[in-house]
Image (cartoon, rainbow, N blue to C red):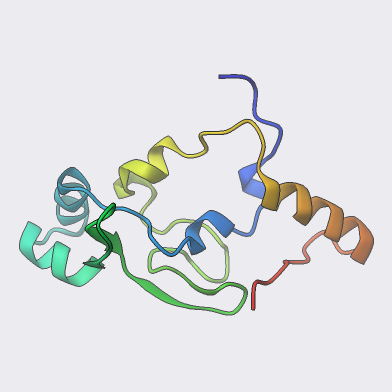
Length: 122
């Protein structure tokens, strides 16, 4: 894969606001181990019914910037609170060379003259 053209550390975690963040059985097992609970309890506590393509997805909580986001996103630091126990999709992300949101965010921060400005989605 070519070098990515963005820096996730400088982002406000837009990818964590995706509606369907898929969770597979290995993810549930990892979440259970990370939290020291049973797989059944982890699935019930941290996931919900998704759609045909993604039968289980991570639960969301309110987010001032993106309406809702992954329940494991620290809303103040915009960092993952379970980084070592995160889902497979998060471990593989990013999968592309460019991130449209990051490019938009860079442009907006320059226009707003505010290096910490966050583009909202509501």
